[in-house]
Image (cartoon, rainbow, N blue to C red; front, side):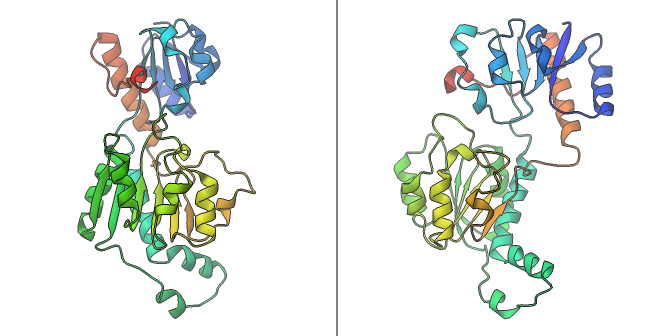
Length: 301
């Protein structure tokens, strides 16, 4: 191995640590992907097909939607793609729970009132809700929703888990009675546009929609319209189709909307833990052992 293409932003200390751990391999930037056997991070999708020396990509994300349109058939089995499945379960699940509780308990409104030095009190108090006993529909059976299920246990919620194998008829039936809908699914051909105008229209006026996976799941215009006209109670959105949002995007001003700006998976040691995982997989790669979190990209396309 002559070089590793580093396709994520690391500090000098982190790069020094990485260099010290990879032995005689040379660390280069994403622009030199074409001459590297290994990539760490998310290289530009249009550069992957032309990187003839590339054999393994360790993504810094769970999602891999930007790579679905590559003609993998022409690459054969020359490139292995691994992701961070399970890596973000704790922080993202905690973001979901905190967002739900913030809207239910009026924290978003109270923070704004505090910034305005304005005391409202009882009019806010009378509109507050509790999570206990809520009907929660979890879309996606991965580690995030598994962890969220554990966090919801003390609230005695009625939980329905919807997985890729669940018939859409069951999802549609459940939406009409759901108090909270939490989506934590990747971007792929099956999930894109799943929450279109019709499915958003199935939600009751007191329902909350939480999206933690990818913005491509949702018809954003339909969701913004539902929020603006109070056809649903609120939304917690960690992801959107375009990031960052443009200044004129309706989500900035729709009521009862928390935009967590794709920070849901964040922790102070996030990058260091990504390096740890990469180095673990690098040891496996060099010794010929099975890699962790291999993505079956051929199945997805």
